[in-house]
Length: 286
Image (cartoon, rainbow, N blue to C red; front, side, top):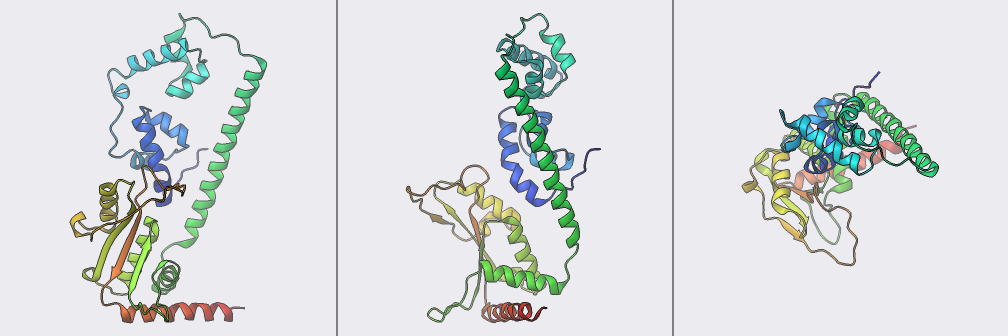
């Protein structure tokens, strides 16, 4: 029985760049589904939202294009199994389309062993992905709706981990929060709303490397927080150190969002108090 997976924000953020790249490379929905092991139609629809459909998958010419691609792959020596994996169509259709073409040369024992090993590994990866999804789904279900008290503690801990903090040698009693994770940003903003911080007191700024797509990053963060791009403060461009190997590059990299709360000295002091209260509470817990 196929496990129904409730799509989460984490799934979307992790898979969206790969799904877009595969779509733009000309793969069909079925091919993308099989490559990414995404069997939830709602999640697949979200992953492919806004990405143009490849011309060869459009009706009424889709079958003709599939046939042509199948024949091209067959002439390259691919087997029915390999063509099916590439195109996502049935073996019976492939057989009808390519039966007049010469069969590919018989595989050597070592090649057959390699292909069999690859199939076993693909199956193992699919099993592992399913186990991951089940574990995440079960953990997500354990949380449920948060009380104000729970959100209070979560927000205070988040800020103390990621926010700007006051130092004895440099007084910084104002709330400034920086993060690159959209989920973390959404939790932090929910926390501010729970505390009664008005939207008018919030200022947003993108911080990103010079090699990135700055306009795309600005649109990404503006959409997430629900403001117009023009409402963002001037983006901070970070220069790239050529000696550093950066992995957070390419499509799907949007830098960090900086959130500043105006008139927040009192809020900062309360955050510091909440945090030390959490620390003392943890020490007292049996």
